[in-house]
Image (cartoon, rainbow, N blue to C red; front, side):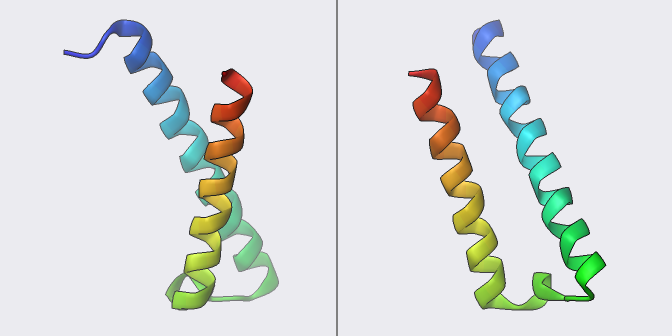
Length: 61
């Protein structure tokens, strides 16, 4: 079983990822793009998310 602190950190990170995904989708919707169905753009979104996760992790170290 996960430690309470680890569980809280995981939930915090999951929340942040969900907010980021919503923001990406909102921006696409406002711009009239349907990039969530476009593999190349989806890969770019994933790269952006991964970069944000790595940045977040390196600041905590």
